[in-house]
Image (cartoon, rainbow, N blue to C red; front, side, top):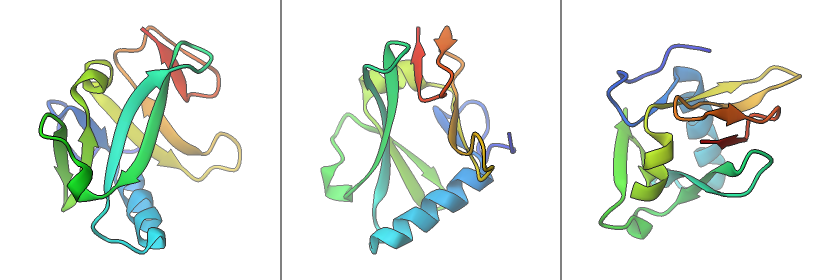
Length: 119
């Protein structure tokens, strides 16, 4: 895992590699103002699965937490943040096992694919 861009006190951390890749994906969407929403939902092979999607700034709710990374914003709802606080989001371009990787200190178990967890 590469070094996270923020200190461990931040609710959700990004590595430089993840930030660079997310910014590239946002540019491909054609809108440099999009935020990244990160959250959890029921499902997945371990009980809860991670979700990420781009979102327009006007869709951010008053109770959402917003984290700023060099001008790029990540949004998370309060319920998801209970499960994600301290999460480090990394990205790997490895041919096997590449893609976004979630290191979640709150996960009691994770599945083999790394996209779901249990608490």
